[in-house]
Image 1 (cartoon, rainbow, N blue to C red):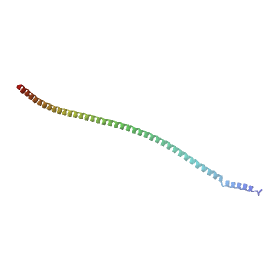
Image 2 (image 1 turned 180 degrees about the vertical axis):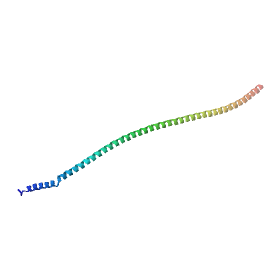
Image 3 (image 1 turned 180 degrees about the horizontal axis):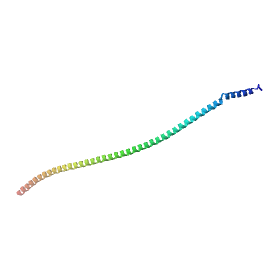
Image 4 (image 1 turned 30 degrees about the vertical axis):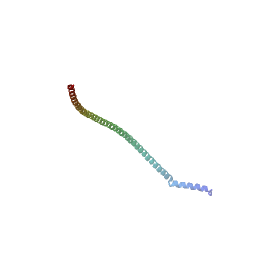
Length: 160
């Protein structure tokens, strides 16, 4: 019975367990496990705290994003409004400029028309004067010819 090795292994094992109990190893194991459980709990608490901070930051950034998006929309709307106003202003100024140019062109046309009519009147008057001189010259020559013809007729009649 004492020569059986399994007896000695079992006896050694029980002695080893008795020493461990005597040295309070189970208390150390329990204490070690409690410390590990405490560390795990602290890590879980820290993770929960980080999660709630992350959630808070997420909500905060989402609010900031919505605010920035609203501000961006307002800026875009303002820019569109300003562009529309500038386009309207430019259109009005171009229309006014075109109206001024049109009025200036019409005034210039009227002036040129007036100048041409005056030139035409002047040239017509010159032509009339020249024609009158020619007619007077022709009449004068005609009168002299008439006089010569009458004198010739009178001379011929006297001779006949």
